[in-house]
Image (cartoon, rainbow, N blue to C red; front, side):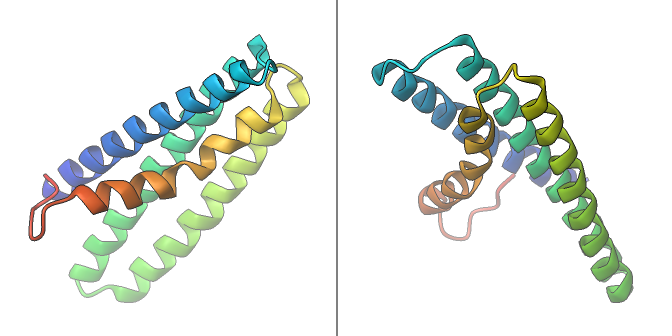
Length: 134
């Protein structure tokens, strides 16, 4: 149960950070005079894809940690590896389909995938030392 709380908490942090960064990205498009509805749709789709990717990565990692804790280290390692390959494959298919549809601005679609790492870095900076994330 504790690992589920951590996954939800961290995903909430990532969702907030990605939403803020995506809003700033859309604002930059507006300020540059390059805004269109495709930018908005691309940003929204990219944010959802990015948050979903993080969520499934966190779930896979927690499941692998549970396996490792139960003395099945090889099973945990295999789970992480397979989860990574599956997530990359799904990301590729979804991004390819979105790009081919012509509905989404490609930059606005892909850029939110980059926002996860800075969000986690900033969140870690503000986290209290020794504090439990839940």
